[in-house]
Image (cartoon, rainbow, N blue to C red):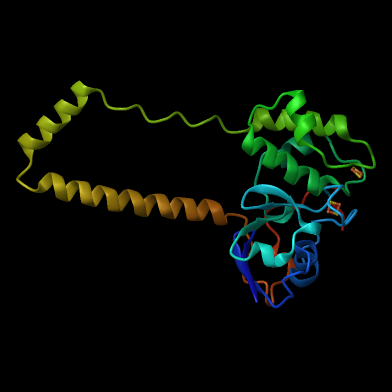
Length: 227
Ligand code: FES
Ligand code: FES
């Protein structure tokens, strides 16, 4: 039994470990967005995210993803999807799920790629030669990316002293310790809840056993991503 997380949902597949992940996704789970092109790791039509990295699923044995997080085009939640629509990137659409998975992984690693970075990072093939539009789509996605998070400013020495003084004056012995414990617990709970909700938004429902493509499909299917 091979177990991994697919688009945010745990799946358990009764499949030989040497079956390519691509076929496990398409034939056993029933998600058809990930395409078969060359079958030898060259074209990129089968690109998925494996623990966040772009990976060609036609040459990745499903046994290799045991315990991992896998995302397919159905579960992709990234501004590249809107950017592709804005720039009308797809032509026939066949390679585009793979292009989107590769582009989103590229932008996660490098949110401001140069033309050279894009040329080096995007090795997916397109028989309709949409390469210029793919590049425009990536640049549009850069504009749509959320602004980077500012790191929280560190408290200055003076502020720290003031805060400590106030706490000491107003609190009974041991109150600071209790407050710290409570705050830490609260923050952890809140953070975990928020992260879980975000991570599972648009994710698949149910497990692979008995799961239907509609249930397992994430937010919007990619326009032009034909079966
Ligand atoms: S089908 Fe996987 S790289 Fe071509
Ligand atoms: S193969 Fe037709 S859009 Fe890429």
